[in-house]
Image (tube, rainbow, N blue to C red; front, side, top):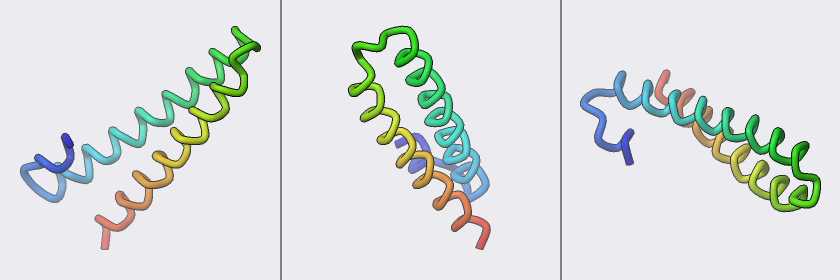
Length: 67
């Protein structure tokens, strides 16, 4: 939603890149949670996959902005 309210193409791309960084950070914390709480491994794996898909989507959008 934040990126959709961007004031320019440059601002949009920047907000998408921030979103990609945030999804990567989420993946890091999910890995940490999985190690700290092995009984939640399946749930963490599922959420990690979703965060990874978002990371890939944001990367693709970011690349598309360069064209």
